[in-house]
Length: 164
Image 1: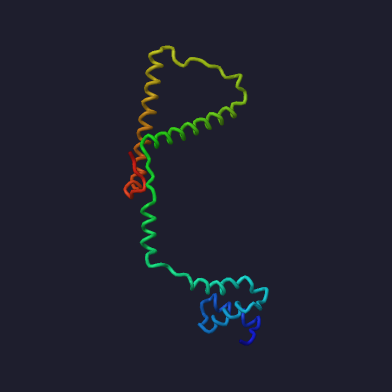
Image 2: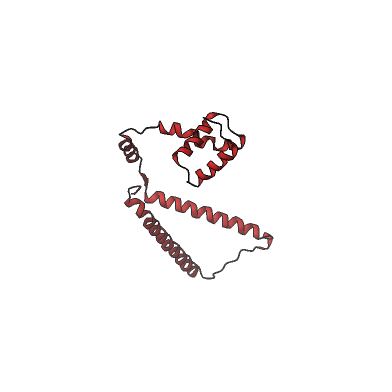
């Protein structure tokens, strides 16, 4: 094959990347890049034209799809029990609360001014307020549990996650 000059290769590459080359021009490019005598400015394109030979020798076996589907079906299903989900949620809540406490402790520059004082004079009123606060927290956690169950439901229907 006659030597191809740099200008011709440059023009063929431009046409190639614009999808305007014909089969004969692509063969010229392929032959040029396989020749070994490549201009250094074109080395970045060498693999593009030399790897296509190895790609053509790759064959997929007839049972490839069957083997792939078998591997997919053998993938273990992740099981999350309600207890595990609640434990994760409680752990996250604990971490958030600890972080909030640390941030607030850093913001209180003079901790010697903190004085503990009773907020209720009547112990029964204090008990009612604590009971109300705990009931509010319980209902909020119930709502969080229901939201978790609802958000996991689509994955559960697909069989990816199984809730106990």
